[in-house]
Structures are given as structure tokens and as C-alpha cells.
Image (tube, rainbow, N blue to C red):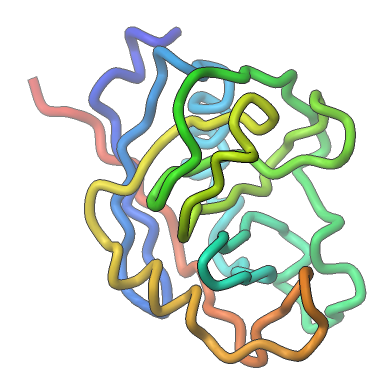
Length: 171
């Protein structure tokens, strides 16, 4: 599975600019395959980055954010779960990792980009990619004004994820 994903990238088109991600199929092949599949199906199109903590992370991938009912944001998924693929990739600025509940094997569609140093997440969340272009867009999302509320801060005007384009390597 990892071989077929080698060199594949995702261009995440957001209201704050594009973020290009290179996947790490050798570290988390099932998570990479899941993200690519959901992206090709248009699952992420129109979702919003619903949780933003500057200097830590920005989270998206919840289909519930396609509605204006904020009370359900953060609780949505694709209807399936993926077992954890913990690896040795350090959670640092630009890393793409899967969000989950308290159950390590509960990842589905929600993901987060690390905005700052987050080594305390190492070995507890599955890293499956990293930003190779678009740090300016990451910073714009992370620095969007948020409602007060501390740890689970929601942007006043959440940045939309317009679509994800999967780019296959040319041979």
C-alpha cells in the first residue's frame, strides 16, 4: 500500500491560501490511504477549520462544520475508524496528524496541522504528512481571531477548506 502512495501530495485549498502536503506512507499507510480516499470523494470540500490554538495547532476535517450549527462541530466523522499507526515522527511545526477521541483507534477524518512545538503528542497521535509549501496559510488560519473559550477555541470567522486536490507523481 505504501508503495502506491509514494510521492503523492495533497493541495489543500483554503480561504487563507493553499497548503501543500507531502504524505508519509512509510510511517502511516492506512492514514495516508484514508485521507487520499476521502479527499478524492470530496469529503473535505466545504468544511472549516473549527479548532484553532495559535502556537499549538489548527484542526479541521469535520463534516459537521459544513453547517452553521456550531454545537455539533468537532463531533463528526466519515462513519469509520482507523487503528492508530503511532510512529517516530516528531510533532513540530508543519506536521499533519490525525485527531481522535480518547480511544487511540478512533481516528476517522479529522486532522490537525501542528503550528508550534508539540512533542508531548509524540507516540500518541498518528503523524501521516507534513507541509512542504503554504506555511503562510497555516499562520493565517492559526492567527484568525477566536471566540473566548480557552483550549477548544473556535474562530469567530472559521477559515473554509474549499477542496483538496490529490496530485499524483508523473512518471
